[in-house]
Amino acid sequence: MIEEVKVWEEDILLPTYAIGKAEKNPMFLEKRVYQGSSGVVYPYPVIEKIEDTCKEQSYHVIYLENEYIKVMILPELGGRVQMAYDKVKQRHFIYYNHVIKPALVGLTGPWISGGIEFNWPQHHRPSTYLPVDYHIEKKEDGSAIVWVNERERMFHQKGMAGFTLRPGCARLEIQGKVYNPTPFPQTFLWWANPAVAVNEYYQSVFPEDVNAVFDHGKRDVSRYPIATGTYYKMDYSSGVDISRYKNIPVPTSYMAIRSKYNFVGGYENDTRAGVLHVANHHISPGKKQWTWGNGDFGQAWDRNLTDTDGPYIELMAGVYTDNQPDFTWLQPYEEKTFVQYFIPYRELGVVKNASEDILMNIEIGVDCAILKVFATSTQTELHITVTQFGNTVLDIIRDITPENDLREKVEIIEIKDVCVTISNSKGKCLLKWRPEPEDIKEVPEAAKAVLDPKDVSTTEQLYLTG
Image 1 (cartoon, rainbow, N blue to C red):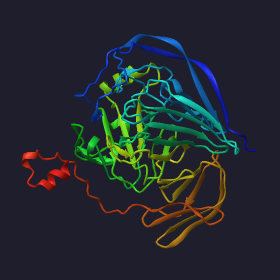
Image 2: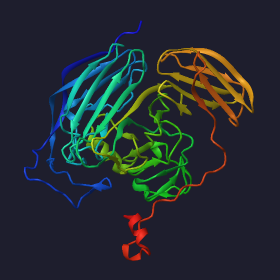
Image 3: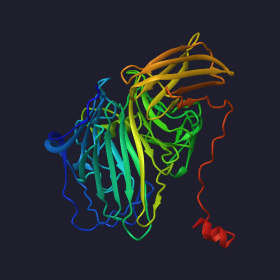
Image 4: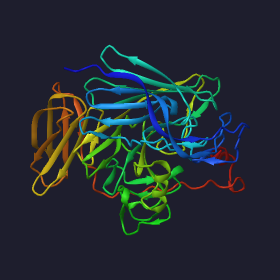
């Protein structure tokens, strides 16, 4: 029997490094560039001090819990997800930082690692260390939503995130809403910023059609997953797999070229567990990895931001853009809405395709292939077929639950011209996958700086550049 989602409020103690007092004088910072965009923060106050000692501090938190997932939300620190726990695998599928240990890397100063932060309306959200409003909503179907929202002070836009758990569903659903209540066009960005714990076995999971990744502003480009050139001043000419955390020695960002798939995530090859972000790629094309790097510098920054929880990377997902700091317009009184899902999964390895309901992978073994399918809710009488060269090599009907994934042998020894189709009992296709063409795709060129106005030959080109 499916139980309704539990939701409750609680006061807890968290070890915390306190912050200094806010600067009482306005800080305009017009000349500062922050994450490739304006560093202006007025009228937000700026904080420029972090205390060296740690003391327990009380926080008011909201918990959401169903059969599969338990989530803790911190309205006092930007409305972030502080903890997300997979009850089946008994693991934190999002990096759980057990201490609030800010560093001065945020737009207005203090910023903390871990959890899921929302970068809105600018990167590393100006209110990331400020309290936001919240509201709890219970639905007739047994689901529960925790809404966090604010009117940001710089442009007076309203942003909302609705953290949703549904009965019987092993996924965290986030409903995003942004609204411009002013009579002027405004710009914004929205990147969900989940952190994940990493070690030498960790691997980022990007779709197979991603053959190249860009730096911020597309200023530099690298082949992916095997880098073969120079990226972030590192020589990868020997061929280095930059999907592996252990192989990136310096602070590095990369964002996928546009992909036709709806997912991005990461996988722990040692524990055989991972997390996937799923959203409509037409609305949410942004797929990014950020790391401090697996070197002395990066490990020092890991220590700056936690006491005991070790290194992490960020697997960011952006709406309305595939790069940072690209902004999107909100017209006067316009509202945009979207949905993002975070899914803990197990045993599948590097996912080939995914929706909010079904995740799948197929891997070639010694004498056959293994098809793996994971469901985020109970799926009965799934019709699963695998064809190769037009011939059916697997045709089965199976029930799958979040507790028990499917593993099935497929009598093939190569992936070429394979098609996997998963349909429900009524014949509706839930997921389909074919391998990407084997021809080597060209790596796109990095963006080039615009010419100085004196070097532009026509008025029209000058106008278009502007």
